[in-house]
Image (cartoon, rainbow, N blue to C red):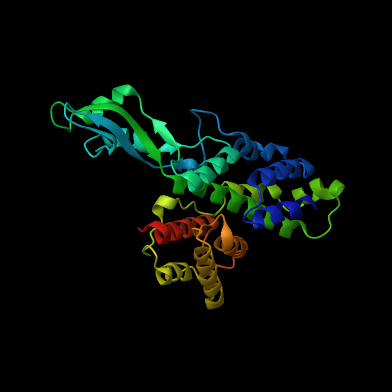
Length: 302
């Protein structure tokens, strides 16, 4: 069954999101819900420039620039922004990521391997906004925003978790061995469109929890602090110990523990299924955001 294939792909931390989305597009046609494919198509091909994007595709960034004086220059200087109006600060530090899922996956992979990440160049005239806080004779030749790649990576986790939640909920509602020709009728009976809206768009009772609203307190290299934060979500001690072993194994392989790769990624996908079935009192969005943050704090510090 196509739905089972989608679940298998999403349950594998190395499974291709693009493949899962393509199969979901076919599935929506099979169940007679092609009116729901807009989200899938946008994630596959990218969102229109200048248009709206889901909240999880709005990420932050750090403003930097090339500043010079007659005696010196700084080529990658963190520019001050507190003197700017709130709306201006928001416009230059918040970014809508419109890229396709495949492009995001490639950008994250490149960032992990080489560093660098994504950058948004600011118009030349923006230099004047920053120049006023420097001493006389200091010019801002160029300004840009280094986009937060942790939040960009979180886009992949959000899409994977929402899609997996939809697939799991629909699989449970449809039951076993439904012939393809009967799928449209059965999908109508179980209100597949409602399941889609609840899991993908968080409509109908699920609260959106953005990553910026989540607070965690673990520190760099502190595995006990990491486990303590995750344990607050209601996982059993056995599951917490499995996470400990996963993080340690990734460390022993000189790999950074993340929700996307390695043993830690596999633990996350297993836990995600449990969260998606409502076994814990936490939404998928909240769980994903917390895991991304605690692992980032563990790797880099809070």
